[in-house]
Every structure is written in structure tokens, then in C-alpha cells.
Image (cartoon, rainbow, N blue to C red; front, side, top):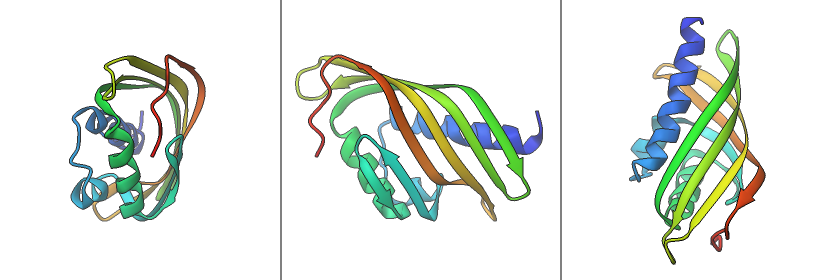
Length: 139
């Protein structure tokens, strides 16, 4: 595993872990993971720009009391200062509304850029393949 591949993988693992740590999902948090012009496509919507990504995540994560996000089977390709990370994602959520469980599984598709601060996500897409339980009402 190359140094860049390890750095990309660690950034994405830290990102997933930060979701379970419950925020604050503010500008400083977003800057540690995303480029200023990042895009994201998730069940919570399609957004463009780091502030919009943070607001989208903040709103979505507010639907849950607790979560566990697990990423695996990463395929990382590095080409100079750009990289892609494809992987599987299993997410377990405890709904804030009633404490019930909602589980989803899918694929994550990401583009990354090397910046002066290190690797950052320029695209973070999550394609859900299956769910179990009742999903929360998205804002």
C-alpha cells in the first residue's frame, strides 16, 4: 500500500468515524474533509460546496440518536494529485423519533484532491443498495 493510498483510506475512515462522533459538522469540520467546491449525492440530497455539504450532513445526522458507519473493501486509485476511492458502506442508525433501528448498505464513490492540507474529498456519493427498517423522514 502506498503512502497516498494509506492517506486517502485514513481520511475516509476518519470521515465515517466523525459521523458517529456526532459533529459539530461546522466549517472547521467540513474543511478537514472536503474541498471548498465539493459535491455530495446521498439519500439526503445532492449538494455543491463545502458549506452545503456540512449543512446537509448536519440535517441528516440530526435524525439519529446514534449511528455506526462501517466502510470496507476500498479500491483506491491515485493519479498524481487526484484519487478515487470506491468502497462498501454499512450504516446502522438509531432513529431520534422513536429509537427504532434503520440499517442501510451501499456503495460509496469518491473523488479526492491533494491540497496543501492533505487529501480532501471533492466528491462524496453514497448509492444505497438495500435498507432494513423504517427510514426517517428526510428534511
